[in-house]
Image (tube, rainbow, N blue to C red):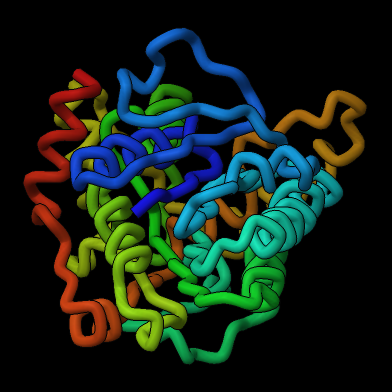
Length: 320
């Protein structure tokens, strides 16, 4: 196949470009920024295109069989208008450009944040009732799914959970920074369970959707399928890097009240700086969220390419 990949210069995007090329696909990589000579090492043709420029996107997609739309603003904090511009309007432009270019298939990368609520949820299926969004990121990823479903061709939607691995710019760096600032908050006894998705697993899942028969189109959860206690995962990752992990037990109401105060103060900051702790971030540490992978396993006959233990070890070795 000839596959166009948006957000190709990001953490997950670069990994997807590599694996798609290794599987024999012709890859057109696109992002708003520019790359240096040989940046993709011959694995892809790079064409610069901003998500707001439908004409550039249409030219980028020309002659492709499918588009995998990875580009997004992914952060726990930021201006709502920025999330809407990138995640919602950007997806709308991708859909229109793909239709104009005659693309038959769209694989849209959403997020498991659409499931998140300030309560425990285990083994969530794709047809679970979605709660009110907890922040601008979750709200706009949910809205981006609606935009993707407007595509006239075949639509697959992926909802990955906590992508990590070598080159990670979000999960591990945030835990490292927090651990170096001081004790991590331990809420609700540290019992929260989570799913994780190794970056190779994420790429394999997206390619499975790009290659699957059209009649299997739909929404699919993506993760390693091996839920872990979040506290244990943090201690293993940071301990493997020689970073001591200290915990401080806090009453949840007090911790969330403090996070609300910090967010209020940061909203008044003209520089728009991110608070050191967000309500959403505390929620991720406090409440369980794991995904049911039955659809991926049964419909797409898909399994993660490596187990969680090996994925964590690879991440530690790459970051050491």
